[in-house]
Amino acid sequence: MFEQTFKNIDDILHKDAGCGSELDYVEQTSWILFLKYLDDLEKDRATAAELTGKTYATIIDKPYQWTTWAMPKTKDGKFDHNKALTGDDLTEFVNNKLFPYLKKFKTSADGADTIEYKIGEIFSELKNRLQSGYNLREVINLIDTLRFRTHAEKHEMSHLYEDKIKNMGNAGRNGGEYYTPRPLITTIVKVVAPKIGNKIYDGACGSAGFLCEAFAYLNKKDLSTKDSITLQKYTFYGKEKKSLAYIIGIMNMIFHGVEAPNIIHTNTLAENLSDIQEKDRYDVVLANPPFGGKERAEVQQNFPIKTGETASLFLQHFIKILKAGGKAGVVIKNTFLSNMDNATVAIRKTLLESCNLHTVLDLPGGTFTGAGVKTVVLFFEKGKPTQKVWYYQLNLERNLGKTNPLNENDLAEFVSLQKSFADSANSWTVNVKDVDPNILDLSVKNPNKKEESVLRSPKEILAEIKAIDEASAKILDSIAGLL
Image (cartoon, rainbow, N blue to C red; front, top):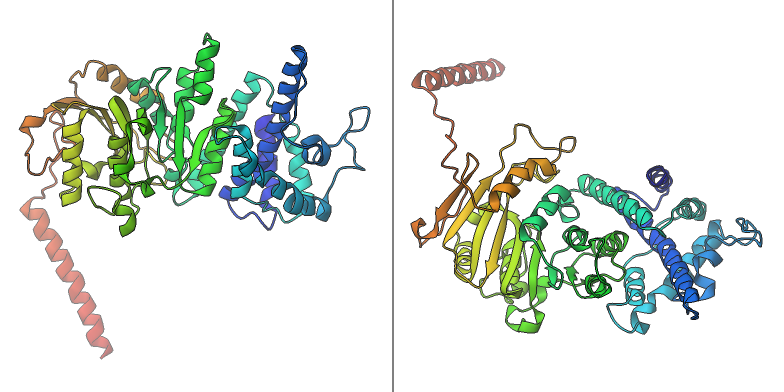
């Protein structure tokens, strides 16, 4: 039922003049979904308070509650068509009353870790793009059929929301910003193996896929009340620069079960590395920082090793912000391992000297749909220098793409062999003392895989030269005929 509802909502948004892309569909669906989620959350809290004989004070004032403006009911519980706003009346209320009211929560909330603050943040960052109040009414009616009361309902919603993020990533030119393949994230989390009590961080969290998967990994059925509170409030931390990704990240975590996600809307790289103190550090870093971006000179001044490459700055940030003994799994372009520019060599040196880079997972092209870059995953622990690096090259018998994406079975051998750093046809170990200390080239070179010769025979080369000469002669003849 949920899946068909989402499709129907997209159909309505598609015909509205204010929504032009999959990104708009996700954004607009998100704020309306969030208000329905809040309504269900308030109902659950009111029920819980009633059971203990307490009175529940609602977060949202009566005129702005879902059941007042969005879905008013008659005394017999049926939709009240007379009271329900639609058309211009609805857009007027939403744009000029509802959004300004909800924005104020940012300044009135007790703290950034409260649901009130998140309400204020979300409605400060976006606006209603639906131009037709009649289309908005149709979307509200559909979203009202969705429920967030039971664990099963939230679980289904989280999967559908993930699918929307995935579609948005596929549709956008910068899809990787929003969507890292979930099988890859799940595998990275398994290998890093965070524990309850760890502070887990993603400084480029996008749609918060790493934090959601880490929550799923740790959120077991038999958790104590203390552990549940620890997971809700003191475990997951994220930062995100872009408004839409920030909103989607918060929504994604909420649908996965974290009520007030600790995600901050900020440019992580604007923070000076020298200002990071022990209290700011984390036990676990899980991230896929944006690559290919170029940072301005003033941002580069925050780092000891100056470079315009966004991912290289993030890597410096992650190394610095890890606690001693802290663990990380970070996706990065494979060229980081081999580029010879001074900055990249210096960052590799810092990584190898301050951390144990114990594992490199080499991923095939097409892992990130819509992005043709080759990537690797770096697994490292802070505090001891690297002595040996274990490599695993993921060699698949098929090409990856939208219709044939990466799955967890593809990575099963990697997870199994990585536990003991075993050698195989796809895995091998490199001793750092055997690496040239001047350039520290760590590029993936599988000693077990024979490279196919790309050298052509002299006969083939001569035949191609002859064909080119003949083609050139014909072109010259045709030009001469025109003169």
